Image (cartoon, rainbow, N blue to C red; front, side):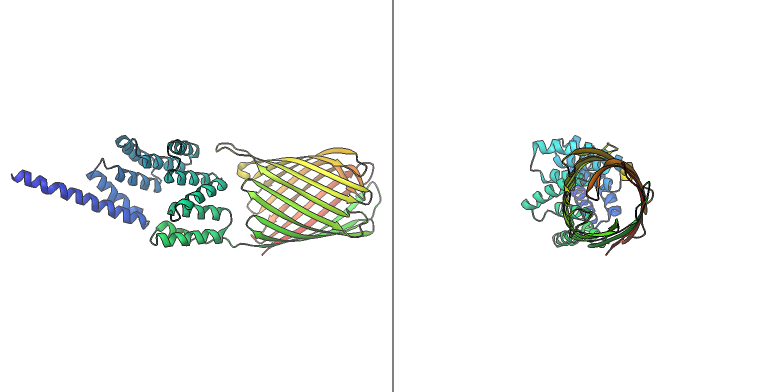
Length: 434
C-alpha cells in the first residue's frame, strides 16, 4: 500500500519537473540565453528521453552553438521515435544548411515540399537556404509568399528583412525588424538585428578625370581630354547619371553630353541605356545611343568559377555616316571574385556599311582590399575623326580606394592605328561618393 502511494505521488512529480525544465528552456531560448537553455533541456530529456519535442528543441539549440554532431545525433534519435514528425526532418535540413551543406539541405527540404507543398516551416527553410547561397531573388519571393498568407510569421519577416539588407535596402530591412519586434517584443533575434550598425547609403557619386596623349610615327598636336560625371542612386537597383566629356584634338574642341540609367533587374541580371550628343561636332559623334546588359549564369555550390554573359551596343551618327558596334562578351570570376577575366567579340558596321570585326581581352585582380590592377589587349576597329580604322591596343592601370568615399585611378594605353599614328595616353581620375 505504501509502495503504491509512493508511485502515485512520484509520477506527477517527475512530470511536473520535466514541464518546468522544458518551459524554462523555452523562455531562455526566446531571450537568447542558449547557455541556460541547453542544460535545462538536457535535464528534461534525461527525465523523458522519448519526448520528441524536447529532442527537437535540444537538437536545434546544439546547432545554434555549432555542436553539429550532437545536434544531428539528437534529432536523428527523435526521428527514430517519430518517423513522420516533419519538424524533425526540417530541423535536420536546417543543421545541414548551417554546416554549409546547402545542396543536402535543399534536397531534404524539397522532399518535404513534394509531399507538403504548403508546409510553412519547410518553405521558410527553403528561402533561408536560398539566402545563404546568394539567391536573394528566390528567397525574397518565398518569404513574401509566406507573409501574404501569414502576415505575422516571425521567421519569414526576419528572413525578408535579411534579404532586404543583403540587397542594400537598409531602411526597408529596419522596418521589417521593427514590425517583427511588435510581434515578439522579447525576441533576442529581433533585438540583435535592430542593434546592427548599417552602412551609410551614399546616393551620389562624382567621377572626374583628365587625360593627355602624345603621338609618334606621325607628327600631330597632343590631345587633352576631360571627363566629368555625376551619378545618383534613385533606388537600390537604379542609378541615373549625367556626363560631360571635353575633347581637344586636332587643334579643335568637341563637347559631348550624355545622360543614362543603369538598372539591376534581378540578382543575376542588369541593363543600361545611355543617350549622347555633341553640338557642332568636328570629330566626335553627333548623336549616340548606347545600351547593353549582363546576365550571371547559375553557379553550383561547388563550382569555383562564376560566369557572366554581357552585351554592349552603340549606334553613333558621324558627319561621314552612321557607325554601329555590337560587342557580345564573357566574364569569368575566380578566387571568390578577386580575379576576373573579360573577353569581347567586337563587330562594327562602319560609315561605309562595311562589317569589320575584332576582339578585346582584359584581366582584373584585387591585389588588396584597397588596390585593384588591370591589363588588357585589343585588336579592333575604332572610329576616330569620322573614320573607322583597325587599331591594336595595349592598356592597363591601377585603381586605389583610400576610403569607401574616395578612390583614384591611373591608366595607360598604347594604340597603334593601322597606316596612321601611334598614340600613347595617360589618364588620372578621382571618384567621390557622398
